[in-house]
Amino acid sequence: FALSLCTAMCVEGDFRREFVLQKGMEEVLQCASASEDNIRRAACHAIQTIAQDKAAAARLSSLGALGKLQELDNSVFHSSNYFTLAFDQILKNNLSAKLALRNCLDADECISDLLFDVGRVRAALWESK
Image (cartoon, rainbow, N blue to C red; front, side, top):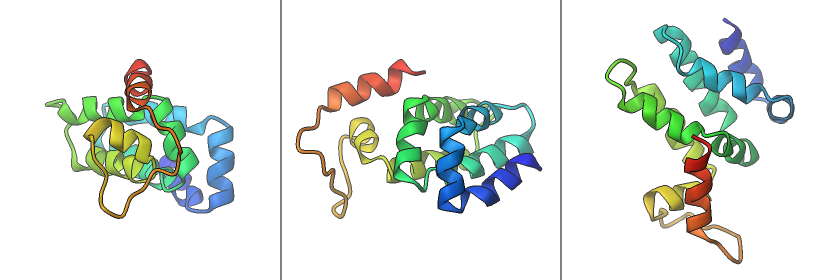
């Protein structure tokens, strides 16, 4: 129930930013690997909602969310479309991570940084695992 409430509240941008500042994402990430399917599903839905914000998506990446979601999705016991949806939402709003992991962007996606080092991003994504 708490994760569903968190998801509903994170739809609103100001609450989502406050949630990020208060380190709520760390708790949600822990719930993604819970043994109960309904808790994992709710955590992934919360991650999807939180990752709608670019700063939150970058923070999730820096916390190792991409590696954790991939690891859980590859698990025989935990594999679920929910992990993939949460993973894709993070990449949608963190193009640096998407480029580092997939080596390409869609035609309508553009990284606005003047200088971009994919190697540093890759290392940071996998260091936090």
